[in-house]
Length: 235
Image (cartoon, rainbow, N blue to C red; front, side, top):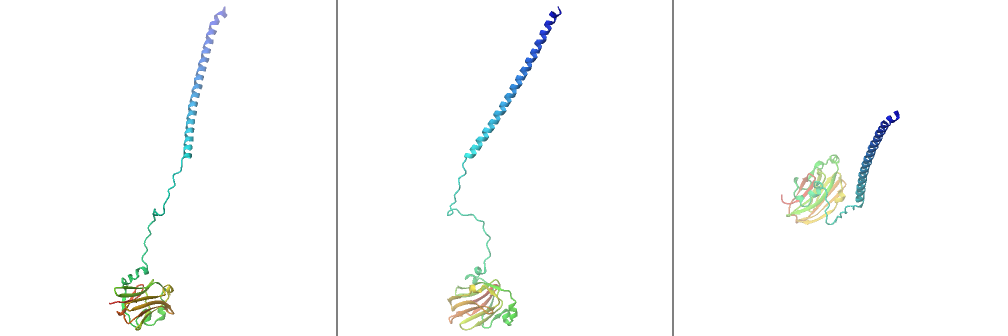
């Protein structure tokens, strides 16, 4: 009698257990499905990124380098930074035309004219002077005038003049460098001036000027800040 009464209760309990198991299985299945779906989406995104990267690398490797620009050296000028202009040298400023643009102290060129240590014959004073360097020796002719000059790094304070009817000699004692480079005879043959020559002598250097009876003007000496000039022209 008691066994028959207990049977419906047990059947009811078994039904609830099966229901719980079914719900649990369903929840697990849904979770697994959701997990697989998420994994699949993540894997697809990674594959897309990998494909895009591979495509970019492939495109870079296939790209051609930019063409090389050719330069025609005959037509294209090379741009260079302009260099600062140097001050004119003694030779440039005392060229044939420049000989007539220079100033200086003018003296009548007569026999025995002297300057510096040569006035009193003071050899010690001449020896104490700093060495000079010859930069220019030439002549110029302009409007019937003739000038002959020798120039260096500084003035020539020591000199002595000898004058005859055919020759003018100016001795310049001291130490002069590069005299040999400018030692030559200039053939002038203009307005009574025949020639001019520069040479080294035992005391320093010497300038000799040959003249003819057709000399038109009395010469005079110009003491230039960088040398000496002999001018044949009206004063």
